[in-house]
Length: 401
Image (cartoon, rainbow, N blue to C red):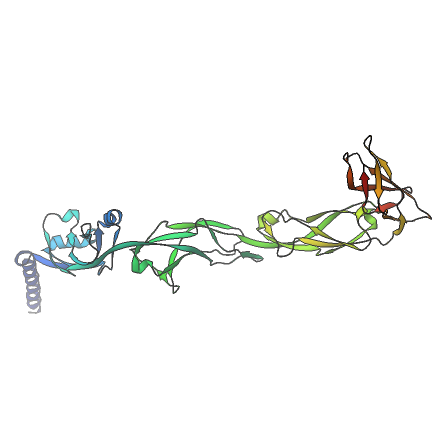
């Protein structure tokens, strides 16, 4: 008896399934399918821009919901191919500047073009949008280095291959834009960065502006961020012997003794010193302080004056001041006369040992002068004692007639 009940139950279930299949396939072979978030494509926007200088803005909806009716088999096929359902709105004919409400066209996938599925309902039924004049605005490009540098390095301000970006779109969206921001970064950066980067439009409140209605004259900009480091290098000089002094007789005190240069690591690598040039001891007295300019190596900078003070002392040398003898005149043009005007300057002699009554010769070369007149000319002073030297330069005034 128990087996009979189980058999009856099994027969009942089979009958129910058969009845459901009959209803589905014979009595009600059709059904409805609702698909959400079908994107809306606006067709003809490029024609509005190029031919009329107009733009579509303030779209009420960018996706729609569509209800389809058809056979269950067709609806299953449609559901599997829902990515190819197209909702389009042709706006090429809307050339007056105002707000519109227009219907859109729902196009089934190519595989469903046999009328087996129809559109039975849609939401919304129309799309509202505004047609308005295009407006352009040029805004500056600004940059931010959002990264880290290696120890001992730091980032310079970003520089761009173009300083301005032109933004075009609806007036109410273009007007608040303040600048285009480029962000560039990296981790433990030690070399200069050079690359192209996209930018974000920023409004006057510092907030990003994102809109499908805005276009720019460039999608990205070239940006360079120089990565600098510093290097301390000594200031150097060359001593020219003269005036009775050799290089070892002079002590030079520099201020500053070193300078800290800023530049890229590759440019600083070969810099080991900066030369102040030559110090002529023949023209330098004991305790004189000279201002010596210097030039920075290429592609480097220094936060200070490009000069150094050099104080020169001669600790082991003696000096004496004697009158200048009457100069010997050479090179005088034929038929010309020369007279030395005024008092002759005194001569300073320097050396390790200066004897009693040191003497010098003085010579004036007038060969460069051929016209009458008064000239200030150099005097060559030569000590008779070769271990001594004359310090400084000497001139006299000569009248030629």
